[in-house]
Length: 178
Image (cartoon, rainbow, N blue to C red; front, side, top):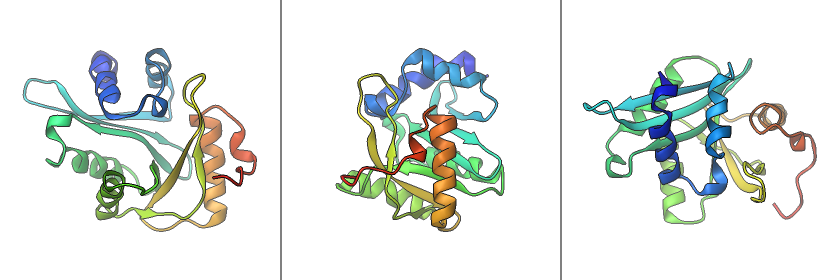
């Protein structure tokens, strides 16, 4: 059960993401009670969490919000297994957010998803702030198994902003600076 190993999951989240890209402990744990929110977990032989994928399932698409693997095990196939398990659970399109491809690590992360069949979209996108006082984060969207249309993107963005980020910012035009 995810709630029983949540501390391990959150610790891995802290090791894997900048603070502005995940919620505080209580807010993150509260998501476990929401029906559209799901987590897949990968454990080692000692039953320790070595990787997780947190995602959302909506009526017309699914969203991968976080995926993380223990730093000592990255590159060993854990992340690939988690993503493939998630993709195999449904035939709905899947989207996820990635950092803009501005450095080698960001380009490698995008390449990881491309090898799994995701497509880097060209749409401007900003992840709303997940913590008080933290700025919004300019990101890019990747889609699976095919590109999404501008109409689909706008609908998906609206649902993400409303359901995942609890804001109506997704209905507003993005600033020109992004």
